Structures are given as structure tokens and as C-alpha cells.
Image 1 (cartoon, one colour):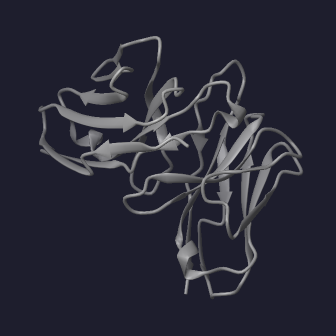
Image 2: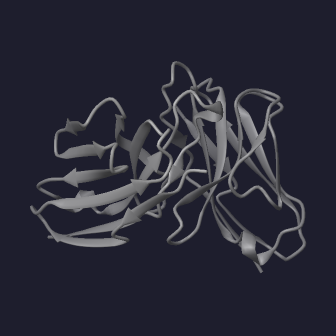
Length: 114
Length: 114
């Protein structure tokens, strides 16, 4: 039972480069989320999805795009990376059914933009 | 939007002592308050949660209390053990709202000294 899997686990980018972070879940969850974690700021929601083909903005969406073409996958894209996007990124999923909202998290992607 | 504040940011306790972490929230519509534990190098994991129709909930050595009037909730860990050392996050959400989005506090790093 893999749960939520994030790829890659580590990445170093140069300013202006682009990349895509992949999140895959095998729990048939409807809802998926991308968070960033910075020291002292907890986890902040970037974008989320309530089902295949849907996406919505969270608290800090600027500089990121997302896609949910398949129910099990949620992709986070950085079109032109900036040093301010250096962070640890977490993907999460939840069933969204009956108000039950436990979020299951991946192990994170540590991204450094130089 | 919702704002969640968490205190203290760091907490050092002697093994066997109790630890208390406090959070306040701003949106009176929030009705679900989970606590997540994050061990080093891992994603956060749900340890206990409470809904707004309940004032207190206990699960073995951990308990959570909620004061809706004052808009604050607390995590209590009794008889702390070295494996309780981790970062703890409180969060708030409105069940049934689009995405069941979680707003997290800034986190508390707990160190249990043997």
C-alpha cells in the first residue's frame, strides 16, 4: 500500500528553469492538494483539486500551475523558478466523502532554486 | 480567510512530563480541528481530531480540547516519551466547504529529553 507518492524527492533548479512535481495516490481519493512548507509558517495551500479535471487556487498560488488529468495524479508545475520558491513541497489526498477529511501526505519534495 | 496561530514554536520537556500546545483560529465557521505529527524527513500524519460539537477528545496519552467561544483548541500529551519528539501542527477546516481545505498553524517542535 503505497498511499501518496511524490516524485522527485530532491531537486535543485536554476532561476528561470521549469519543472513538474508529480503526485500519485492509490487510495481512489477525490481530493488532492499541494502544500509548501517553510520554517515557522506551517503548511500553506498552493492549489487543490476536488476531482478529476478540476483545479482551484489555494492560499499561495502565484508562480505555480497544476493539472489533474487522471484521478490518481496531481501535477504541480513551476514555469520559471524563483529563489522564493525554495521550499519543501507536500502533496496530500483525502476521500472527501461524508465530510471525512483526513489528509494523507506524501514524503515531500525538497526543492532548492539557486 | 482563516488564520491559525500556534504556540509555542518550540517545546522541550523531560521524559514523563506533559506537553501542551495551543492554537487559536479566526473563522467562527470552522468546525473541524485536526492535529498532525511530522517526524523528521516524513510527511505529516494525523494523530487526533475534534469536531466543533465536542469539547474534548482523548486517545490514550493524547487529548484535544476545544473552546468554540474563545476560538482556541489545545493538544495535551501526557507521560511523554522520546518517540513523541517531532513537529506538531494544528489545523482548522470547514467540513463540507469546497475541498475541505485545511489551514495550518506554524508548527511546534517538541523535544522530549530522556
